[in-house]
Length: 361
Image (cartoon, rainbow, N blue to C red):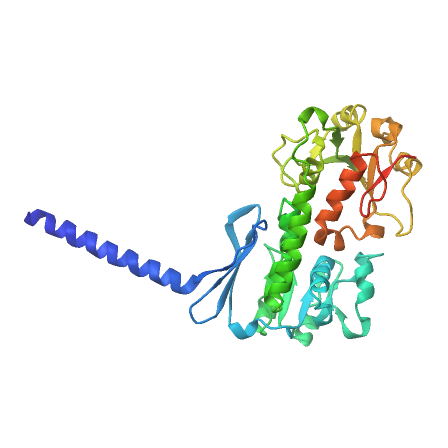
């Protein structure tokens, strides 16, 4: 038995070490405090002292932690000021009644026609970007509590963080479900001490969205839909696991590339796009044009010489969106239930869409 004593001692030492590691891990991470139902890109833990840890991770690969931020309980308050790099962030702030907390916004020239900008007092905010560049000196001068970015790699904000501003990556655009993107509202609600409001809003949207899903439709009754467009000589289609194809499935469509594995868009050959376009009944068409412009089939035909060959164009079954006029990239992200209703109306041949409209002539 003597020969087993060193082994037993080793096991006991290892168990003690593991116990210490686990306790330290618990102490650092705390208990789960906020864990969204659909959004995969963030969660919050709370320690026994009442402080928080915000974890931001890549929604497409949740093993990739992008940011780990320690927050004192006093850091979470409704008086926090903020700058943002995306027009979408302003919509999140607006929905929880905190748009007045914005002190810095992105270059508005990139967002022509965005109604959300009309809600901002231009005299009370400053522009913190110039094209794709960052006006670091302006951000330092504003000294906001939080800077919300869309960056998750190859970005250096050390100068800004060293001045005391907390930089929060917002990666909602990497979520591959509509409800996942919307649920980032809870992150903004948490940081601005509007947590209950954000939860109430998101729960209502989730309920309305799920009540609309066309689960009971047989596959044979689902009309096919295409998502492929030409851009600068190349053709791109929505990936089978992407954000927009979730709308297709939930609205009762059969997406032609539903078995594709991409989370975003992917390149297709002109020949394949044309082949599908000539036979598929419905087609999603998105184009930025003047805010007050109504998209017509003639406009669609004039956009590309091949579009006139699409069955959807010939039969007047184009489901079109003008993001400039509709606010699809701003308010649309917080109204996935409305977007889903648009697709259902289009499939049923009815008018009344808010973000997407069925173009029949």
